Length: 244
Image (cartoon, rainbow, N blue to C red; front, top):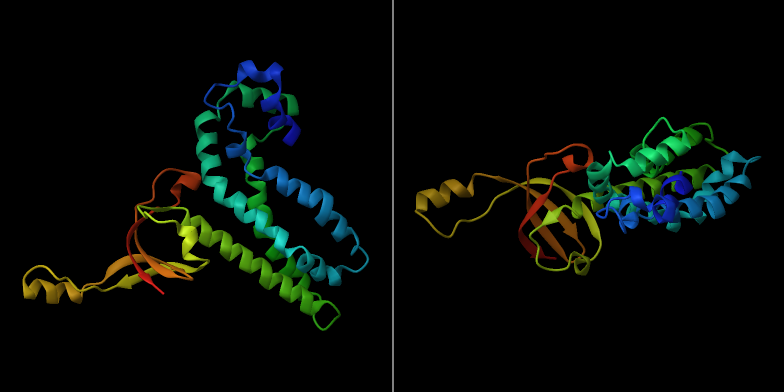
């Protein structure tokens, strides 16, 4: 599929089928898919093959490569941009021709979703392996691998919310690691207005989405979801922050 789509975007013989707006957008459409492919093909698959005869010990393989799984977070962060671009050009003659030559029943967007499905499937596979590996060598590694994968999934989920923050003037990266995020009731004092209005407002909660970073808490207002697919993801309008 990589050769059938991404490589074809650089093929001079296919250039006349690509609209100008789509040219030079390969990195947006595919994200770091190539990096994920090479990680599996050159590293992870070869490591897994060492455990064919000892599947209960496969947890160690995951733990040894856990740092490399961060590449999935990068892919998922780019996915909304990729989705938006695909939606604009999904009926492009270029993509139709690529799909025809590959004889694929499914269009490109089905394959672009594969890394997202893969990273979420690992935790299910590890849970299943752990179920049949109780009280045997490697069980602790399997449990640790599962915990680590769940941590990566949480980081991916949190980052998908974080990139939807709008209206913040500073650099989010300077706030440190995102530790937690979620919806909360928030109460605040109103300095302006009649005393009765202020008293009433004090006891009326506002719904806010909080982002707890290492250095600050951001208070945001969740905006209505609209669109389809990944564009259904909400956006968060920045309102206030508290230093930690």
